[in-house]
Image (cartoon, rainbow, N blue to C red; front, side):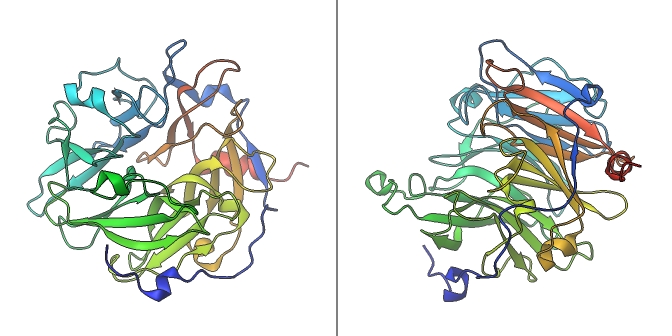
Length: 376
C-alpha cells in the first residue's frame, strides 16, 4: 500500500453540530409518490443502486436478494420509475455475489457506452454490458484485492474515458494474503481509489486516500462542483462517534484534502447526490445524525454545493419514508429526469414486522419548496 501523506491522515478539528436546526419536510404519508419496485413476502430485498440511461426515462436497478449479499436482481423501468419490469435474466455468476452490487454508466474515449456492475468483498469483480443492460458478461475479478461496497462512487474525469472509483475496507478484504484479511483492534478503516483509462474495462492498482482508527470513513458518495473545477466526496462515519465527513480535490482526484466533519444535517450513510435544474443539490442517505427526529429513516438534504464547502447546514431536510427498523434502510439510487423530477429508489422495512423491500419515491424541488413555506 502506498505511503499516505501526513496531511491526509490529519483530521480537521472544526466543531460541527451533532443535530440540525434547518426545516424538516415529511413525505411519509404522501403515498401517491411511492412505487413498489419489488416485494417478495418473507424474502429480504435490499441495497439497490440505479442508473439512468441517455433517453432520460430508462432506469436500471440492481440489488441483492439478502442483506448486503446474495443473488443480484436486475429490473428496468421504461417510464422514469413509474412502473417496473419483472426480474430480468442475469448471468449465472450474479448468483454468487457476496456484497452490495453497484451499477454505473461509463463511456470510453471512442464514445462506446458501457454499464459496469461491481460486486465486492474478496475479490472485487465486475460485469459489463455494452447494450444498455440487455446482456451482461460474467462477474470477473478486476484486480487481486477486495473491498466493501465496491464501487460506492465512480467519478467521470475531464479526460475522455477516464474514471476514478472508490471503495473502502476494514481489514477483511483488501489484503491478498488470506491470513492478513482480518479486522484489527482497534479497527482501521481505509478509503481507496482506483483509476480506469479505458472506459471501465480495466482498473489500476488501488491507492489509499486516507486511513484512521478513530474515524471510520467509508461508503463514498461523489459530486462535482457546478463549475466543474472541484470534486467533493461525502463519507459515512461508521464508528458512530462522529458526524459524516467530506474530502475535496481540485486536480481530478490525484490528491485530496484531509477529511473533515460535515454538519449534522448531512450526517448519514451512503450519500448519493443529484443536481436540480436550478443548480441546487439533493443528497439522499440513511439518517444516522447523532441527534435527529428521523434517525434511521430514508432522508434527503437540499442545499447548495457551496453549503458543503462552507460547512453550512443547507436549506432543508426531507423524510422520504419512515423506516420501521432502527437503522436498516436507504442505500438509495437517485436519478434526475429531464423535467427535474427526482426518482429515489431504495430498500427498507416499510411494513412493520416484514423483511425489507424495494420502493421508489418521486418529487420535484418546486413541490418541496411549497411544502417548506411557513404555515400561515
